[in-house]
Amino acid sequence: MFMKSDCIQTTICQERKKDPIEMFHSGQLVKVSAPMVRYSKLAFRTLVRKYNCDLCYTPMIVAADFVRSVKARDSEFTTNQGDCPLIVQFAANDARLLSDAARIVCPYANGIDINCGCPQRIHDDIIRTVDLCRKAEATGVSWITVHGRTVEERHQPVHYEAIKIIKENMSIPVIANGDIRSLKEAENVWHITGTDGVMVARGLLANPAMFAGYEETPLKCMWDWVDLALELGTPYMCFHQHLMYMMEKITSRQEKRVFNALSSTSAVLDYLTNHYGI
Ligand SMILES: Cc1cc2nc3c(=O)[nH]c(=O)nc-3n(C[C@H](O)[C@H](O)[C@H](O)COP(=O)(O)O)c2cc1C
Image (tube, rainbow, N blue to C red; front, side):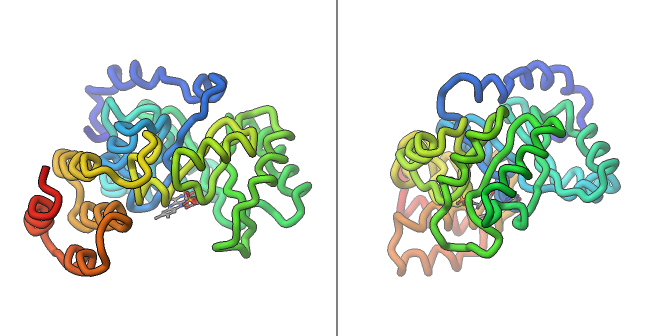
């Protein structure tokens, strides 16, 4: 179902009553699938929801293109009734365009997220970071997600203690993000930081069943991906790439070379049936 189908609007609004804010106030760990360009699309969101993900983000969408082009709207945003609760992430440098884009997706989403980009990750000086977050809070944002690295950092350990300090200084919910690869790690980060939820990107790409407690991608999850991707119409590159991520830990280097070179849906299906048929 595409967002431009007006006839489904009323039904979807009913579904959208699932309120993320209520989830954050439940005292339970809220498990969030991160915005991921090219990857966190409808089929993937449906998959992770099946495996205990509570809240999903779309990939980043450029607000200006979205407002101006029907083609961009059709290709960038697809949803359906089960795709809930959903946060749509926009990148924008113009408040008017952001608000126009938000108005378009409003009946189909539970919230809008603004991508603040890498430079607004935590700052070396935690006081400046807290100050920035409090400014965001004062503008009326409902919650904030913090990736615990500075601009310069790429592979250094995530500063969970900085996220904890931010949480202690805010009244709105805070979500912790960075380097979480299992449900155990998610619970650990939640305890250490005292935040209201955790957001995961690469961990879910590698294992979409992670929030259900699986240490590596179960075969059932791989086949669920195949079914969902084909049912919801996923471009081949995306279909294949997701499987490459999921199989990273469970296949040998030699098998990976063969699988990664496949170039059609039928070749992938044959390969999976021969190697992982269930
Ligand atoms: C493939 C990929 C695409 C991403 N796309 C986005 C995006 O569209 N918007 C955004 O805010 N962050 C994006 N990110 C950053 C993630 O949301 C997340 O903050 C980052 O990967 C750290 O989390 P992780 O350690 O769980 O991977 C992307 C990350 C990856 C790996």
